[in-house]
Length: 457
Image 1 (spheres, helix red, strand yellow):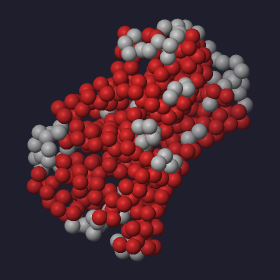
Image 2 (cartoon, one colour):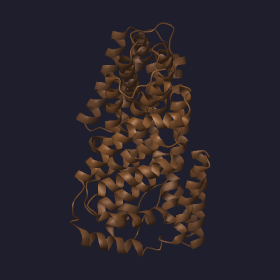
Image 3 (tube, one colour):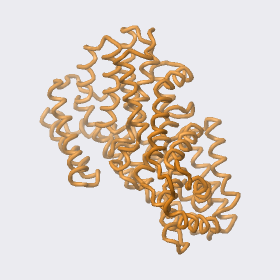
Image 4 (spheres, one colour):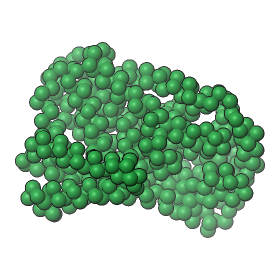
């Protein structure tokens, strides 16, 4: 959205003050007043419109900025509709219940959180999508955690950490391909280089999750009853594995995520219809309203009652508002001013790494869009890395370490809103336990400050 910036940018001090006021208001509403994020985001939009009008911007120009900002997230918004359908169709086909049943086999072990982290990480690499991993395996593991009275916040932190390990390392991931392509680095060169920060972050996170894991399952009897009831459900069937295998195959053959999820959802729905899980009329209605479980077991019903287009409206409406706010930040020149003023002072590996990481994190916080944090930071810094005689793969690594994995930690971001809705755990609750997402930028900044693992051009 750099093309939205005005010809004359505000001063750096003015831009920082405006950003500080807006983020303070949003933080106060969400943390202090425990408000739904829609309200403070809308208040921030009104503040930015007032600021823009005071700077003599026409309302039509400000409105165009909001529209352009919202349009930048249309790909994700359309995907959200399909993910709502995916969850409900995988419920009625028995795919998610089957995943839950498999997860129950691991629940009694002493390293539950670490196992959740490791399995979602492997699945994330295979699927290349943090959204799909969280909405399928993540939902399954949270159901298991709920039944064994394990911490939902820590479980969600493990799921988010694992899902974004996959989002960061998978050659099938959109963000991995974007980070490498925007700075013109070979994809597999990029993946090998980010391993220097990603693998240490994975090991540290795994150890932390292992230490936090319950050593014994206090409610083992209750867990066995729930598992037995789930296994007796008519939803559990060998055909339930077909949709996930199909999704995996389409992902490995590099089909677009939209197409892969749509095909898997349709096949899952047809499987449920052919098996006679419920009448066809009700099955198609579930695409909108979601699946409602009626097993007479409150725990299982709470686990399985999910999905549908209707469940995604909270997410979609907030994403539109957040991206509209981001468009206002650009059309008024606030974010371009900060980026432009920083660029002139960067000449060393230390300053460049710190600035690039801060910019990627800042865009995630103020704009709430993962792709923009990678795209804009990559565009702004690649020439500066060339001038400092640093290989561009250093920049592509920083884009992933401080761009990709930070978005789920921001309550009003695209990923944060989606995950809080799908996992039913607030971002501020799982944030302290999303160890991988917190550790990755710290490691990349340490490497930059010490100039370790930095490749010269």
